[in-house]
Length: 199
Figure 1 (cartoon, one colour):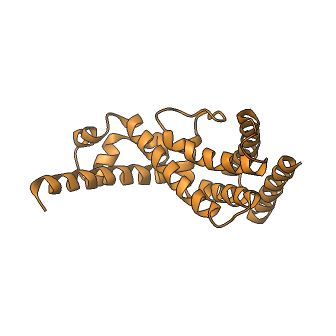
Figure 2 (figure 1 turned 120 degrees about the vertical axis):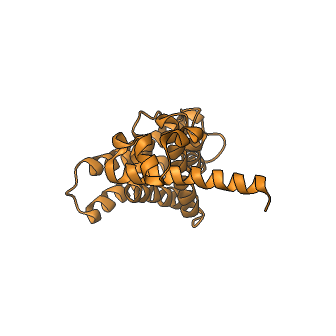
Figure 3 (figure 1 turned 90 degrees about the vertical axis):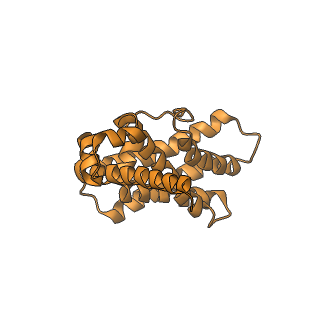
């Protein structure tokens, strides 16, 4: 391996270490506690080194948000690919979304901690479009294909997202309802929206 490749590998490793340290701090102390100095302490570098990779804390959080969307998309795609019927795909993808929200709670809160509008995404985060596109494609197929208007697909997507995200938000803020009850409520809600779409 040449000098140039070795330097690039070291840069890539350092960048990865910065993101991992930030994720760990966010997990254990909350995102509001994250600082470049804390990250530097964890990876045993000085804060100016971190600024060589990320202009500021917001840029670092944006990169972690993208990472979260990539992880969520990968998991949802795997769940979708286990089924052929669009209703089964929708159920599998939303259950995966639910699972992600609690196994990656801090990333989820970072990803959805700001207002997110249906079918409108921040241009800085094109990765955020992938989960919505997979869901929308399954909705369109369930509704009969290409002749369905974008507004109608968007409305159904927003109905799904409002119910699932709302239930997740309630549970992130207020624990106390058993996981079995939550899963049943989630399945009932997903099934209800699917039945409404099928007419």
